[in-house]
Image: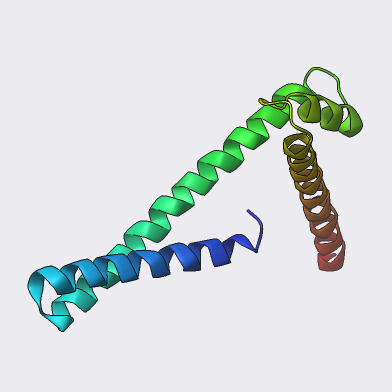
Length: 122
């Protein structure tokens, strides 16, 4: 996962805390109990959103692997993904192709950083 995903988890934990804290404060009228419920809600939301993001990233990786097994290179993948727009609009295909391009750049950056890190360890 990208390092920027940690902000996604912080946001989800904050939303969980606010939701559980506010809801339990209305029901119980006890700030200490609400604080405990808010902490539990923070953990619950951040873990559930983490599982959601992990499953989405696995699906993207599986889709990319299945396309790569057909013998296509990265430029052909971008063409194939951009032509598979469900509604056929230009803005949707631009969004899909830019997302695919960003995913490819992130994976290639990670590989280069890993190889650079391994060379520094030697």
